[in-house]
Structure formats: structure tokens, C-alpha cells
Length: 272
Image (cartoon, rainbow, N blue to C red):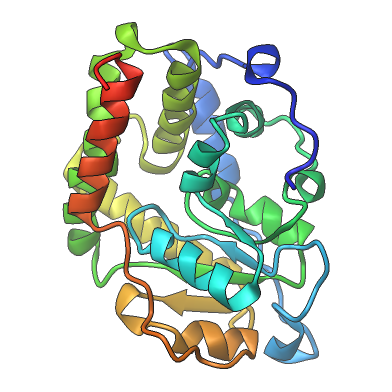
């Protein structure tokens, strides 16, 4: 699964974004360029259908839009791995160089990388949803979102953004691989939210713009819009699978995120 990966010590790619704002802004230009993924004559029935060794669902939703719950749900529905930021951590960060290279515009063989996966949501893969939509033309594009930009910001500010601030403050104490993970995520933050990514109003505005760009770029029959309160129904309908009897999984609350990050940071800084 995920193809052949060399030891992290051999493939670690350090990307210096301290002076690389221009490169990140170029990445932003690639993200927001308009490209319409047009309709298929067969309609929605051709999307997300049974495929072998291919992504059936490509997540385009930003972090803190229920993506961890979606990972659990999609693995239940599809029976394969759903790649998520938590997957990257479970793989001991060996995938950081791949996504850092992609963020710098280098070509990635996505079918080799995602071999064995049936879906991908959350960062880092959502940052490349356009490329993946083109690579997997029969995949569904899943836009996860919150009820409003304000609701999203309250969750993101207390979790993802707070984590980035804290890591930035302790970079001198971080190991090279953790530093590389931070720099990878900072590239995404700058590309999506701009150099002022820590500004609340700017972040909320760009959150709305990101979602609008996805809607404008994807044919209606290929796009699945989902919010955490929607549960199984939209996913099962789009994938043409039965609705499970068990309740929809709701995991990775803000409190759970904060507690988990605190434990992980203690390990990274030698306090765990």
C-alpha cells in the first residue's frame, strides 16, 4: 500500500518556506485556477462506482470539516483505506517528502502513492484535489464543510491554527522530520489562506472562497456536499451503498484534538 517508500532518513526533503512566499503564492494560483470537471453522459451513476486500486472519493474539504469522521465512515462503506492526515502520522511521517515535493510543483505518481486506498480526505491530499480529480476522472468529489465560516473558524482556530502557532514557537526544539511536517503544512496555510493565514477575517473569507471554487469547478452530478450533521445518507446515496445500521461516527472533537496534540508535542519535545 502507498507504493515503495524509502526510509525517512534517506528521503527527507527540507523545504525552506521562510523566504519562499513567492513559491507558495504560485501554488495558490494553481489551486484557484478555474478548471471545470464536466458532467458525464452517464450522470452520477458512473462516479464512485466499483473500481480496483483507484480512489473512489477525493475529498476537497478543508481541515476541521468532519474529515476524521469521514475517514472512519468511508473506510466502513468502502472497505479500503481512506487517506487522512492521521494516516500520514500513523505512517511515521514518511509521506511528508512526497507532499512537500507536490507543494513545490514536482510531479507525483499519485496512482502509485495511493495504491490500496479507496478514498482520501483532509490535508494534505485535499490541497491537491484538482490534480486528483483529473487523475481519477470517475471519482466523486466530496466537499465537506461546516454550517458557516464562523463555525468553522471557532473549531479551526482552537485546533489546527493553534497547533501551528505552538509548533512555530518551538521549531528550534523540533526534530528535522517534525520541522519538515510543519513547513509542509505552512505551505498549505499560505497557499490557501495567504501570508496572513493567522488573521481570523482573512481565513474565514478564504474558507468561503475555497468552497465556492470547488462548487464552481465540479459538475453537479460528481460533487457531494456534506456537513457533519448529514450523517450517512449523502455518502451512501452517492456511492450507491446501503446505509449502515450503526450510528454515524463522530470523532476528533476539538477537545480530543487538543488533548492528542498535547500528548504528541510532549513526545516531540522530549517530555513524553
